[in-house]
Length: 466
Image: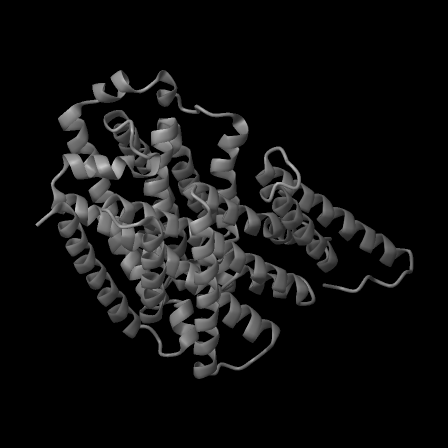
């Protein structure tokens, strides 16, 4: 059988096994649609820890990290290091608060801290749009993998999108955690084995002799690009819908915090592996596209079955990441909007229709973005930027500054998202946009809150709340 046939056969068998595991795990969760989407209080330490690894050790981490390794060298690891730091900060800064309060989403916190519904709606909409951008990045990774085995690019995007949609219909939150835990182990072992085999065959001399010195610099790019690789991921994870859901899915508070803290500490050193594989791909196949260099190198230099299992695990992690985007969006619409804002009671049939329509919207727009854009990590950081710029300050400002008001939070969200959108779409250029947009958001939060307080103290009527 030809290489392409072996890869596709192993990929099909592995995907079928993963979907079966997800279905079995879902059947162990509670029966309601909302329970299967949220999975509260059902995850063990191994599920939380393993799924925390898979949350980042997937398409962006592996394929994007290898692509940046082929472009920049060891400095391509900074995106992965940022992923690890994001989990460590999340566990230490918000883990206890989120778990004890059982905040399924940031919207739950906004409901207890601020008055009104507009801020919750802004967060909900921005999160869904952020999920769209992040899923588009996952589809690009799926496209790169399918392209390496001869499947046309757009067909690879469509296959990844449709398969992930079906996968989401068959699994729930608990199934996602179980599958993610297994995939993270397979990917880690596969990456480590691939790197060890490549080093044994070619030696590190293949890198030093064929790559320029800049490829061995820890930070081979400018400070603004360096910041864009790390801070958006950290900021966005602190207020990420998926992070909230996974924290409250743990059986105990200790499991929630320790699972993600340990996951972050493990991810940071592992972040060096994909860039090194990408560097070998660049050194051995200088004419190959950066996004596909390491996969072509593996196919040419390692046993086909071994590479097939690794690629299958990465593709399934793409499906898992897309599944997380779908579940996050469905949870936002069902929990935050339908139950939180509209105060609707649970209706399984109606909720199923709403979840399906939400997933179709996310899928369609993500496919459009994936076809139009080519940079995996750029799409992922764009999604992180849009969510964090409008939510970080209302969240942490509400915790740290008791004088912050509802209208201050609303102004903060609007100003931060507007600044991030203006920079992302080229209307203006903000230096260090992930930092600048949050600073603009903070200024709006403080100014509007102080003006509202001053108006109230001077005998005026308080401004209408958000």
